[in-house]
Length: 203
Image 1 (cartoon, rainbow, N blue to C red):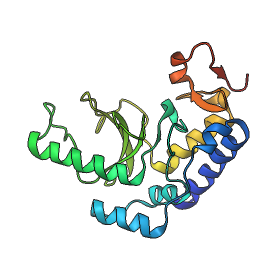
Image 2 (cartoon, rainbow, N blue to C red; image 1 turned 45 degrees about the vertical axis):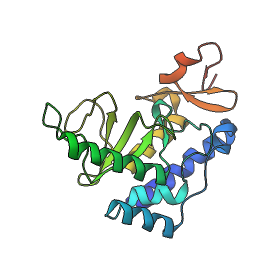
Image 3 (cartoon, one colour; image 1 turned 60 degrees about the vertical axis):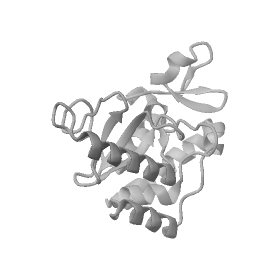
Image 4 (tube, one colour; image 1 turned 45 degrees about the horizontal axis):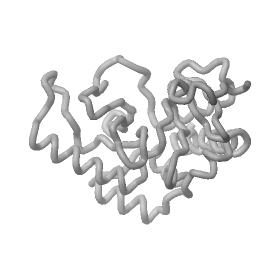
């Protein structure tokens, strides 16, 4: 299956689940980006994005004001413009500071921020390494699992499939399990923030 078809089918399953069970999260989703908008972002990055990411951007632009919490650990899709801003800041820091003490780059030109814990403040990020096509974790406190085996490594398309599988079959979820608070999807990894109101799905 092509990355485009894989991402499209997985996102359709995710969106359908949100519409039925987490309408507040579904309502927070933005419409997809146009081809012209994606081309402008690719020009800003200086490269064409992998098809799985381009497809996801065409399906949704992330969340609007507020919170949707669609992805594991209640991450959301980084809005396209904010991703470019973040990338530029990280590249400036890389040029000024160089690699970290373990020789891992602080940031590279082909690392594209895709998911984060906040649409406005990217303290915790899953970025796409366009060379390998794999997602890695990064945070502002210096943790970067690039080139390690700290967690599962996915493409954008396989990551979306696992999110969809975990929503539809919570009993089989390996990485994170879904729950609900007032119509919002809240994954188990964030349940401790609202211990009195979080309810696992299905209840």
